[in-house]
Image (cartoon, rainbow, N blue to C red; front, top):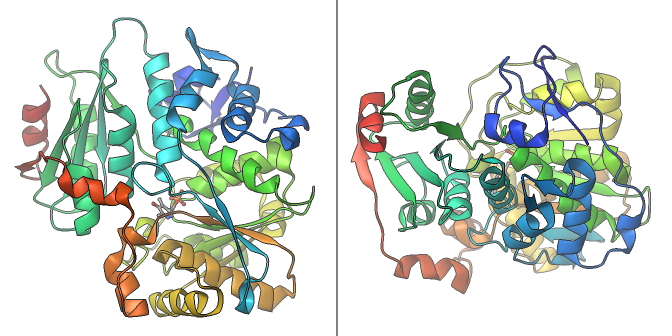
Length: 427
Ligand SMILES: *Cc1c(COP(=O)(O)O)cnc(C)c1O
């Protein structure tokens, strides 16, 4: 079975269950497979999405975690559809929009968060309890809370910066869920992250055992491979091209895992907003450590992507540059793309997906390669009504899945940006 090693290569290889419980490797690196397993060739024949997902993950991590079948974890976590919409018109002929936002919180974060919750519950030794701390600036927190809600041995504490998430995002964070506590921090996202870090550093018998659920956890990353396989099955072998709206590069890293374990992709497009660390690296080989800037596609506002460390361990720069084409899209071009895509194809894209669609248009113009291309649609447009209205002059349609949040009861508690306040809440 695949064992996991640290990107810094000093920590001992561990089984998947340990990597999930640890989050970060003890030497501070991120877990990657010691050797990428092969998924084989049979995946192309599996039509059922949950069957396909289980087969891929079993090839990576085996059939069980503890005594729980991986198949059962996946079946429970991925209880929603992944429709693929084929666009026609403008620069987007034969673009396949892979809609990853049909889960309960309407962003692709549901894939990783829900599967990770199942993995962690299965990996936890009998009788042990954990408290999962999550600092969130938007989509991650609600996906994690939703994934873990109701798991008896695991409690979730969410921290978000009050007044700095959108109204829809805030609503999704504060609805009442069993086993979930939401803290509105009177501070910034950086304060929230610092409080989580400081809480981990405090060891006292009164403080419950803590885990983290951020995007560096291998248990969140691996399940994200499944929709790359799903999309690749729609294209001819060896011709899979895929554009990924990117921030922390977790989604793209999962794509590269899928590439190495079976898909053999022809090309990836890394579509970034004004935070252009990775496109800059691809074109110059330099690492520019700039602070993040705020944009309309706020889930991608990352100055230095943490999964970069994984990508450069998986592939040398030459392989990265030949496999991945990158670009950086401004807010003005994002708004224009929402408008143009709507006009030419009738499709309404959220701001993150729009960054991807603009990148496809640029890629096609610059390279002349007009072969079919998948685009990962990472969020539902209704999560960003202000931006959609700004671009199109009218707000997006709101699906019932999102509407229901406004009918649920809420809970949240305001705390000062101090670790003592956090600890007081969790003891
Ligand atoms: C998190 C997120 C992204 C970026 O994904 P990474 O794995 O961080 O690159 C893109 N779009 C949406 C809607 C997100 O929530």
